[in-house]
Every structure is written in C-alpha cells, then in structure tokens.
Image (tube, rainbow, N blue to C red):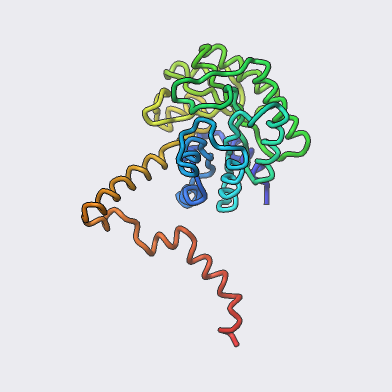
Length: 290
C-alpha cells in the first residue's frame, strides 16, 4: 500500500477541490472517513479543546499533540494532516516535530510562522516571527524530509494580520521555494484577497473556513474556481457536537424526551467498530469450534 504521504500527493495531483472536515480525536476522524471524505486535518483548536479542555493558545505540548495524531492515524486509513504549530522550539525542534509526525503516520504536518506560544488564526493577539526565523523553520522541515521523513510540509503564514497581504504572499512564495508542498495564507478578509493568493502563488493552496471567522465562507464551487486545492473546516464538527451535547444535557436536566436527538444504539456501536471487532475476534474463539 502507498504511504500516507504518497496517497496525499496523489490526491493533490487531481484537478479538484478537496473538502476537508477537521477532526479532533480518533472517533471524529472515523466519522469523517465513514462519510466518504478523502482526507482530514487534526485541528489544533479542536484537539486542545477536546483533550485538555483549554483554548488553542499553545498550551498543548509536542508530546500531547503527537499522541493525539498517533491515535487518529491508528483509527483511519485516509491521510491525516497534523498541526505542528510553530515546531515547538527552534529549528532543531522543528526537525524533530516533522520527523515525529511522519513516524506517527501523518501524511503532512503544518508548520507556521507565529510567535510562540501561537494563537488560533481567527482570534486577537497574533504575531509572527521575522522572515528569517520563519524561513529557517521551513528549511528545517525540508531537511527532515531529506533525512528520510516521508511527509508533506504544509507551510502556514499569519503575516496578513500584522503586516498585510503582500508580506503574507511573499513569505508563502519563499516557503514554496524552500520546499513546502502546500501553502496556507491564513485569514484573508475578502474574496479579492483569496483570489490574489491563488493567482500569485504556485502549487496547492489551502483555504481555512471558520464559520463566523474572518475569511469569507464561500461555496465549494467558488473555492475551487478561485484556485484552492483544499478547503479545511477546522471547527465545523466540534461546534456541531458541542451544540448537540449542550442541548441534550439541558433535556436530561429537565427530564425531557431526548431519544429523537440521539443516534440509534445499534448504529452507534457499528460506527465505533463493535461489529468489526466481533467479526475478527470470532476466528480466535477455538473453544466454540471444539
């Protein structure tokens, strides 16, 4: 079977938009795969919320993020793009992050140019490092690939917030020159900015669609026509799940009938994998055959 990175490369060669719901744990990733999507991304925002119950403000450690990614890749076959944040330190830490994510089975890892500790791209207080430090992070990521890490580099810049679109595009263009496989200019504010990003930059580009965020929430057809290869939806699943859980908790608290809003127990077991487990384990039950 091809490696996760090879599978992702093949997907990116297709002249289409890949819609990418983002997961936050193994179960959400399984549901994405069961729904027929070709790939997923481990949202740092959602993973931080689900794993430690804290906002995406650089509180999760490299080890925690790596463990979360490994749990996800163990649960699904579709390629996982992992959030590597700022690389968790200097250039040598970036190399370790990229190598670790490759060993964990991630198809790609995102490395960004924010100051550490980073912040969610659609929240206040963002700042980016200097150009040279940002470029060193991508150099280090590429060096990790050349040393044997079979993984793609998703290079992200948040420079639009502080320094304007031109600086963000210039940084992304250099990231591409240094070996980045996918480019991600975070938080363009208008359709015209999104068009300029795709016009000025070569290779696959990713749009990040946060419902209620700064980037226009365009249709899939519009994103494809602009020139994006991937449309990431980092909070869609988590926001949907949280809303449903809050409503169900209120129903339970007030002793209302909640059954219409719940997944059938049989379907729930099947989606989690109980039936698959029973089918595989049956061949080991030698006592029943004797």
